[in-house]
View (cartoon, rainbow, N blue to C red):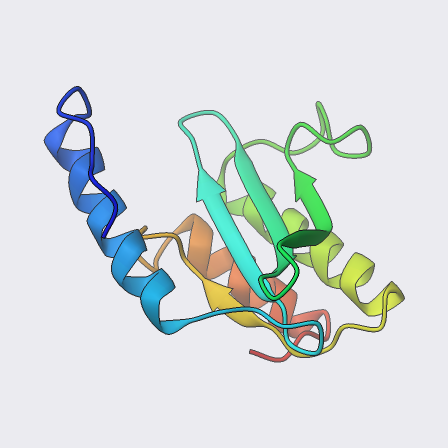
Length: 124
């Protein structure tokens, strides 16, 4: 596991440890990329990542040009973000993904984002 800086809060250290444990087990491929989610206090970020080549296939956040000002880091915003990322993935021919919650608890915004992506056509 990667060493965590002593200047990071205990709460963030715990999240980073959980994230490392999750990443040991899951990896994205071209056929089934990793749907990676990151939450900050003000924004949500979502990416579809192919770990075999280390490349982001699709990326979207609440700061993206198409969503900026319309979508915020709330449960409603997460639903909208989930729909949009699923639409972009389906345009690129991606239907199956692996969900990477990034060490965050699977509730609230993350659950809303995942449910909206499933409803829009992605299969986890």
